[in-house]
Length: 422
RNA sequence: GGGGAGAUACUCAAGCGGUCAACGAGGGCAGACUGUAAAUCUGCUGGCUUAGCCUUCACAGGUUCGAAUCCUGUUCUCCCCA
Image (cartoon, rainbow, N blue to C red; front, side):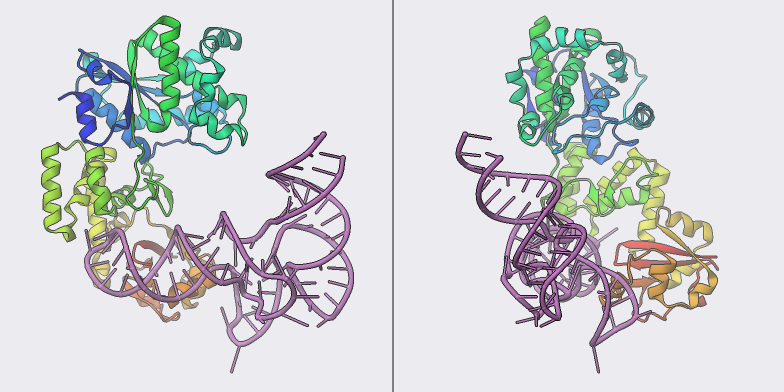
């Protein structure tokens, strides 16, 4: 099966330059995707792009990952309603290294001809001076052409700096450079990148008469219209310090049936047959949530590790299984701590146990931001201690301390917190 | 430069002298039902020492027993005419 066909059935193709599918029929094609080093970790939004590269490499083609050390300094206006803040060089370098490390987990950098490669566009932009650039690159792209891009049109009224306006030329030149120096003939990217990608294609055609191709992936939409990849605490990161393996696993477990049917195609490498089977089994007994589990296991294992996955599964079964206060007491300290890794910890003094829960959860700890909020939670029956619902604010006593040290609390069903008694 | 409209809680958006911590919608949170899903229903959504009190309706003053609502000034936004 060829790459485009593979990506298509997985729902990973939004748009492509005519001829791209045929182009991939040739021997080995080199293709690239750019990542912005705007944070010191990638998040699951970038996972879609990473997966396209993984498929690419699996089919014997060569993936190049471009880290936008230079473009990160300029700021891509695509999909942004406001002018971006520029990052300083130190932050940028730090981010580049972090992102590099994460990508190394997915792609093979040492498998002969089609080994993946990482490049940083800062390397070819750092010594490129302004005059040469506007002469050698700017000359080929008419203003009228640049103005028709959505990223520009949407912003021209509300304000956009020359810096952001020129972004498409900078990214366009990346493509040119990679084409010239690395024989890279395809650019991949999210659908919001279409405009920038096309500028690159145009530049290559006009400057050197070259023919190159592109394919974009769709923006992932949840069935309820919400943004993919967000939880109440924000982005889901690939870095387990920012998003613990347990939370990462839970993110996939919590996906709706509807969404999961799309996710499994995009985020796992399972074949169409395997996926059909899982979906069929899932539909026969949806309450077992085989589908969500299949995705969560597959993705957590690849992004983190089999050990992290084991831990996440164990934690989940203790937290969401039928475990009771009794079961909690049976956990030794090490198990307890690893099960609850990533759950927020709050320290209190042993003598604070005598204060009522309202005070304890707002003043002594910051579980609730105000007593009003705490009261509302109690009124709606949302607070649990050691897995038991609590209505009485004077409920707590020393018998509730587990392992002579911990008290496990819940705010609602899914939000755990731990009080450490010292 | 001349004329007009406006600035209200996370967002949109009522209110035009007391009954306003402020209608409604969206979002968010929680509860019920389930499958840690979706849909649905319900409650909550400024703070506190909570039958009450305090701080909020761009900012600073003023009128009034009483102001988000009236007056003055300031800042900012939008529209029309030059």
